Image (cartoon, rainbow, N blue to C red; front, side):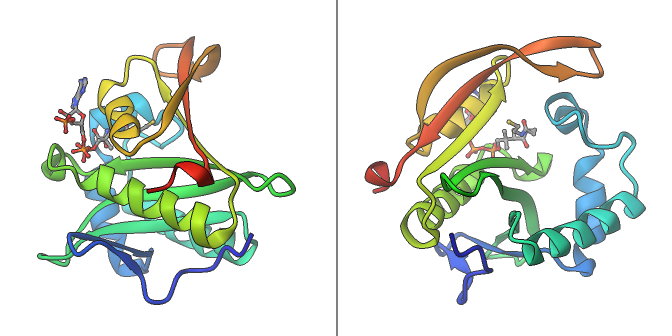
Length: 186
Ligand SMILES: CC(C)(COP(=O)(O)OP(=O)(O)OC[C@H]1O[C@@H](n2cnc3c(N)ncnc32)[C@H](O)[C@@H]1OP(=O)(O)O)[C@@H](O)C(=O)NCCC(=O)NCCS
C-alpha cells in the first residue's frame, strides 16, 4: 500500500481532504469540545484543549511518515473552512486492511458532508492505495455514524459484542462492524 497524501488533494467539488496543518488547531479544539464527539469517540481528551489539538496535528504528521495511516482535514470547498476529520488506520499491512474513523463539527452536520468524505477516502484507498478492505466500527447506538456507513455503500457484517469500552459509562459496549471491498467501489 502506498500511503502518501494524494496530489492533487481528493475532492468532489463540495468537500476536499488535505493533511492537517498547525493553523487548524483552533478549528479542531472548537469542534472536539462537543458532548456528541465525546460520547462516541471516548479516547479523545475531555475537555479538549488547543494543546491536545497541536499534539494531534503533530501525531498525524509522524503517522503519515511512518505509513501508519492517512489523516485528513475535511474542508468545505465553498467556504474553505475545516468541517471535520477523517482518517484511515492500517490494521494489517500484509493483508492491506484499513479502518476508518471520522467526526464532523456540530455546525456542519446533517448536510451529507461526512458521507461525501467517506466515499472519497474509501474510493481512494481501495482504487489507488491498494487497500483490500476498509472497515468501520461504530457503537450500535450511534445512529448517525451507522447511517453514514450505509449511505457510503458499506456492508454491515454484524455486531462485535462487548468489543469496546466506553470509559464515560464505565462499561463494555457493542460495536456494529461494516466494510467496503475493492469490487464494491462505484
Ligand atoms: C457521525 C457524524 C460524523 C455524521 O456526520 P454528518 O456530517 O451529519 O453525516 P451526514 O450528513 O453525511 O449523514 C448523517 C445521516 O445520519 C442521519 N442521522 C443523524 N442522527 C441520527 C440518529 N440519531 N439516528 C439515525 N440517523 C441519524 C441523518 O439524518 C443523515 O442521514 P440521511 O441523509 O439519510 O438523512 C457526526 O454526527 C459526528 O461527528 N458525530 C460524533 C462523532 C462520531 O460519532 N463519529 C463516528 C464514530 S464511529
